[in-house]
Length: 142
Image (cartoon, rainbow, N blue to C red; front, side, top):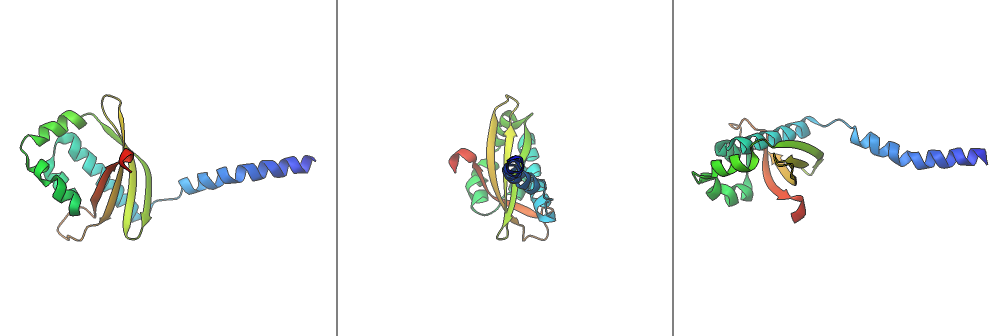
């Protein structure tokens, strides 16, 4: 009976050990570069830097946001919305030549916005950024 209790204990803790092992797996260089892109994007939001934001976005996302980013009053809006905010990367996964990053934006008011970013490798050799954001959605929209 005593051995049975130990066996149950071991079987119950194995899933926890597996989850902890998966969470501590090191990120690839590509995943680290993608995280740097997301952090650069957040920094640009906090500074109202629309030039950098344009350089970090690609595809349809850039097309959709171009009018806003070209609006001369938009940097002030970004500053009022994101100044003093911080970012916390929650999850980072790589699949099919793209990287998905889930992050929390913690606004200066304490409000937390969960964001999902989809990044792909940048094909522009002149760009200083290795990865470009092709999708930026609220976790509530998924």
